[in-house]
Length: 340
Image (cartoon, rainbow, N blue to C red; front, side, top):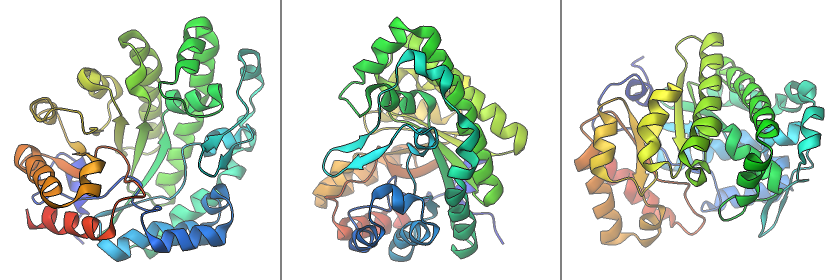
């Protein structure tokens, strides 16, 4: 069998038309997802149910034939495995018990493997059930991004609580980030060993950090994850997505050693093309163009294909798909990208 299209690009090959998948492609914009989630009960119940998590991961593949499926789970399963009382409140998002500096030393990762076993079971199920040509992507949250939720207990507009925590308690933040990096690396290794073709590290809040903090809390721990994963799984392919990193993206790529860099929609094409000369890039359609449809969507797709399509590119959104995205617009997106 010819190597999966996504994996060819992650190896540095230029493939046209490029492979396409969408962040959060299994989600609330799909009626079949909403029905499955209603059956699951709570959001975390869905994440930890291999039958239902497999089903919702497969739903967008059946409907759109994306070149890759991404494991259905959440970045906060790691703090959940640390018993931080993670819950998802309807209309408000994730909540957990905010962590204090003195509590970090008492965090116990010993139960994480057992706690996350259902997720690994889902990965194995998916690889067995996916079409042969479809790549399977595993993932984790980057240590900095996961830490921001653990410190505030919820998401905030600029993650000021975590930034203040890092300035006031740098040693405690280093300790927390180091623990999360160790746990995340082991988690990704298990996903790869269970059948994931590659993994993505989501640093959704990297863009709020100043340059020294970005080096300390985004690049350095991501590098530790990459090194540990590749030590256990030689040749493992890894995508890094430091949302909002902007001009720090070249430093992120060279400092972390990831195979491909995810770009949010604000990254200029000239900058993206220069970054692409050093290796594969992924992105970066504005998710709101997908909602708008019509000319706005077509112009966005065509610009990305024209500016980046002849180099190593994974076509994706610049952030996750939103619940308001019409299914017909996603169908059109896939068709137009594949038409080249």
